[in-house]
Length: 111
Image 1 (cartoon, rainbow, N blue to C red):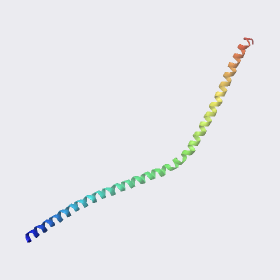
Image 2: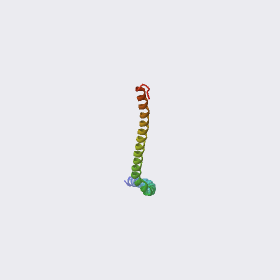
Image 3: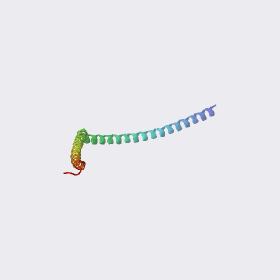
């Protein structure tokens, strides 16, 4: 019984040592991964700060966009008004000339 007990105890000790080594290596792996995750998190925090500072510097320009859009809209309105005016003048000139020629032809070329 003693030899069986001693061999069982030795086997248990070996199992415990093997388990301890395995868990130790797993903990080392976990710690390594945790350290890399923490490093990645710090990098993300730095990048987030950079993005925030860029957004803060761009914020005044972004706030001006509606005003600029309104001014562009006003310019488009003035362009349209000018185009309508020029078209009206040109068409009235042509209609006067064409109307005069047609009237002259209707009167049989008599002046």
